[in-house]
Image (tube, rainbow, N blue to C red; front, side, top):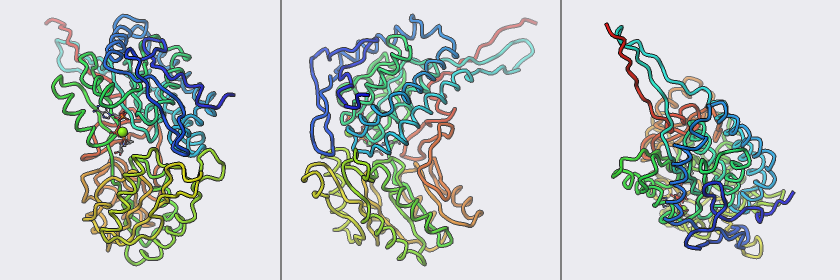
Length: 489
Ligand code: NAP
Ligand code: MG
């Protein structure tokens, strides 16, 4: 099988056909491991968005899609899952080239999970149902569930294919049509998802893919009168911009935003397991995880030894080309992201935190090419420091000590975010009490970073609103209509 990125079409998918941008504009996407250009991709602009929205509306209102049964939609989604698995080697290579994540992470973890997402929602399509409600004896009253309509899905670069599947699969299961705009840094796997949709039998216009810039194609989608719902994952700043822009037409919006998630280790925990959990909680995917356990709270009595163990592990991590088998961590996604991460590392040093591991760019790999940053652990952090308050979205851990459960909960909740949290203890009652007290959409007890299609995921507070995954995600793509039938007296 051809496993090079050249297999990606590099053009917009509009109305069932691969097209150049109407303006002729293109952009390049870079391999962050060696800074080489991987591919040139058509860049959608407002005219392309117009054409795609018109096609999406036709597909919804007069195409075969609107007449299909839920079982027929489910069958196509199931086939999309199968095609992900059939093409997994090629998809994993594309994802790894575009993001810098290891081939193990893309091929063994994320793409299999994306296939599961398509197949979970394949089954879910036939479970969508209204209710009959015995409101009155002289009326028959019931609800219908209808697709919300044309959906714009705007996704970030950290899990390009997987996070797109979190939106595309439930939206299609609900009967919507979908326009997907991938992040500028990582457009390639989204195009492959478009190809998979076509090959699985989606009618033209049902699922379209529009690589382009956030301010161009992204904003055009958000502001377009023909788009009924915007499903967004990304930064808080862009989330705010989208919420504001969507407020004039009062468009439906769901937002999955950032986090600064607390991972709390009590002295009575299985400390080896907790150490692995704390390590993977921050360093999985180079820390480019919205739910990363980036604030590690360790109980005072075990704090020193625990941090020393973590620092040793961080220093031992094999950084390198993500295509190579021995590599455990690849480069961060882009030069800009590397600069941001290095800026936070400087802020940590200047702010008085103690550097326990890493703390620099790794220039010894690929002859100094590539955006490699050593996994970094800061100890002696307090809650007022920049590195404890702001999302870094890179391989940088802030460790903070705590006294007891009340102190841990108070510090953990002292943030504007509320996406996820971890708790490590052998005391079952304490684990449950802390899980209830933490303000976050997901709490992991004695584990971290686990996901399943059936479990809803999303944020409290400024980490966003709406839920992805689970049957809950379908709600975001459905309207509810109440119908009254007069039965006379
Ligand atoms: P971002 O800058 O917010 O971009 C996310 C997406 O929005 C990209 O496709 C981007 O396009 C697009 N965009 C940018 N400006 C836009 C605008 N004005 N209108 C419409 N679309 C616009 O985020 P990022 O830097 O790619 O990703 C990192 C952030 O995402 C982090 O803060 C992280 O926490 C968050 N995140 C959250 C979750 C979650 O599930 N909660 C998951 C992953 C990431 P361009 O790429 O062209 O700018
Ligand atoms: Mg961006």
